[in-house]
Image (cartoon, rainbow, N blue to C red):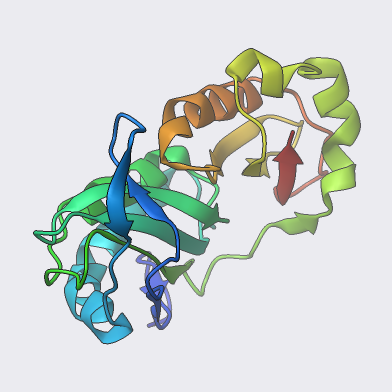
Length: 222
C-alpha cells in the first residue's frame, strides 16, 4: 500500500470448500429429509466469492475513520441451496473486531451466487483477511486474561443473559478503558441476534486502561 494511504489492503483469500458431509440434511424447520448434503468444489467457491473482494473491502473502509487500525481475519461458514443461492452464512471465526463491518460482510456474502452443488445443499467455509493501513501503528495485543476481571464484574452472566455461549469476541480498547469497537464469531447460523446482544454488552463495559495507546483483545464468552 502506498505511504500515507488511508485505505485497507487485502491479503490472499483462502478458499476452503467442504466435501459432502455424511449426515442427513435438514430443513429450516429442523425436520429430517432424505439424502446427504451435497458437494461443491473449492475452485467454484473461489470463483463465486473472489469477484466480491472489492465489496468486502468496502465494508471495512468506512470504519477506519473511527478505528484507524481496524483489521483482522474472517472465516465465513456457508450453506447453499440446490439452486446455488445462499441458505445461510455466519462468521465462524473473525478477529476484525467491528460488528458493523462484519454485518456488511455478511450482507455481501448473502448476495453471492454459486454453481449448483452436486447431490443436494452444500456447506463450506471460506475466509480472507483485512490489513489495516500500513502507516498506522497497530494496537497493543492483549491476552484474554487481561480483561477477565472486567468481564466478571461488568457482565458475569453475559452468556446466559444473551442466550448463547461459545462466542469469541474481539474488541479494541481505548486509553481510559473505553471499548472503541467490538465484533464476534457465531457458534452457528441461528445465533446471530444473540451475538449482537453479546457485542452490545461488551461495548458498554469499562476495560482495563491500556495506557497511552489502544489495545486489541480476543476472548471467549461461555
